[in-house]
Length: 367
Image: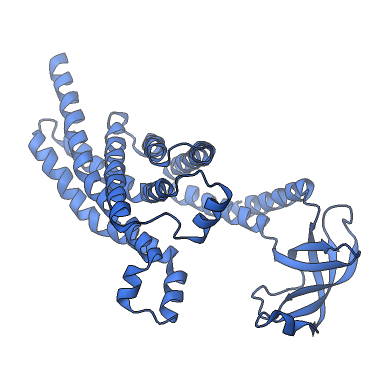
């Protein structure tokens, strides 16, 4: 059944893309045969970036030429990493020059239906294995993504302050996640308070590091491109907002773990003292903290690993790596996220003691 659903979604997405593809200079084609290659006679003009021509028999899948079969010759780099495999779909670009000539090139693999299919497969497998809990987790995830993409990104793009917007987003994402994940509604506010407290601490730490290290926010290629297209955006604040958003998962995981432990202790012994609740929350937080720090730091390192390897291949030593602004930015992400985790534990434990004690006083008053 899951395989049938995946196939149906992939086919449906493929038809939707074909119907809505409106880019005039590109088409989706199926490569039916690779006819051969020949060297570019002007290859010496481009130096090390040697180019070649490849003959292809293609069939157009969309646009005015839909269903038409043609033999074309594309231009590409000799060392291109994109293999041209017959039977697969690719994006074909057509560059028209003033003299009427047309130059064809393959820009990328057409993979939208496959991506949609794998996403549906992963979601379906989660629902099958985890049941209702998996379905609720997916609902929380999709609503969180809708909020971040539909509110946070447009707000920052329109000139909104990144850090306050990120803190609001963390509170909203935490509330959405806790609503679906935590079954006891009286405990849902506790991890939200802990996550927001941890995020606030991470932002303050990040501001201090940016000020002391004199980071500009231009350390990545995407940030430099953004600065050239939207010079009014505060890139330092955007860097800190990225740090905070990236640590939501780990911070919220710690907050939920602490909350669950305190909630179970209270359910087992409603007469438990606030001091014992606090100790339990801090103790569970310490046990979870080690694995969460590893998760956070390794995630940041993994995302920047190609760049780290690039620097290492250029002969930079360890001290040089530490002083590199790109590496400093990743260290900032890791340290700020770690501080966020550290502060999330006492913030969650304090919120838990306060809310659980208030609930107990209310019950005692009512009885």
